[in-house]
Figure 1 (cartoon, helix red, strand yellow):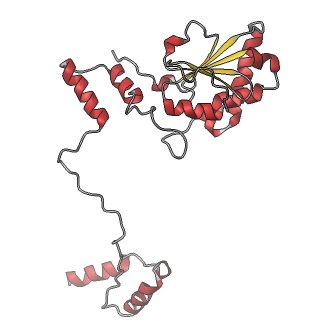
Figure 2 (cartoon, rainbow, N blue to C red; figure 1 turned 45 degrees about the horizontal axis):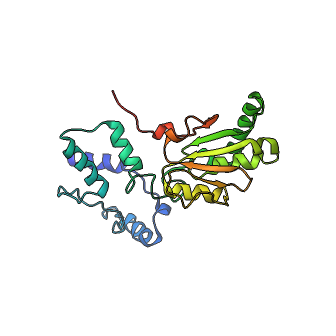
Figure 3 (tube, helix red, strand yellow; figure 1 turned 180 degrees about the vertical axis):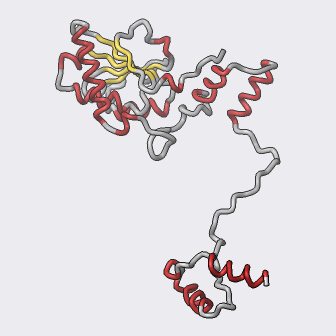
Length: 246
């Protein structure tokens, strides 16, 4: 008696099946099976193409060159290194630093910045720089410095937008602080620089001339321009700067 009551309750409350949401191949089986109360409706699902992640391995993996380098520093010091030193090695190590040997921006990279999204960003920064230059009394020989210029997109948009103001353009000397040779090459291309003045010299500073006639100098370290800077742009620079944790 109890079994019969439970069977009736199940038949009243079991979920309805939408036949038209089932593939045609299985719809026939479902319709034919629903005609008989004694036959249960079954739907087969092919899971062969689903992603099956590999099991986590506890076996040791080979370290990268950067990890080996960091372990060597820690072993040599006989103890931990500072957060600032770790960040500096990870970002700007001459051989394996994150920014050193590749283009990290855009669809082929890891992230995007506002100058790469729209040229209006660099043009608006250019308007701000011109207003500041006018407030300074329109001096000649202004050193415009950009820290971490990425691909050089912001500076290229700035100079192109301000190129009609000849007095302003002729007063500028652009300084790009960039330690990555790969990004320096991209900046050189995007600014359409020519007339390399000291490319053959063994120095951390080299100077070229942009398409707009503005001299452009590259510096590998901050100390090389601190005494000459008049206007500084640092867009999304400090968020990746190695810092010390206390």
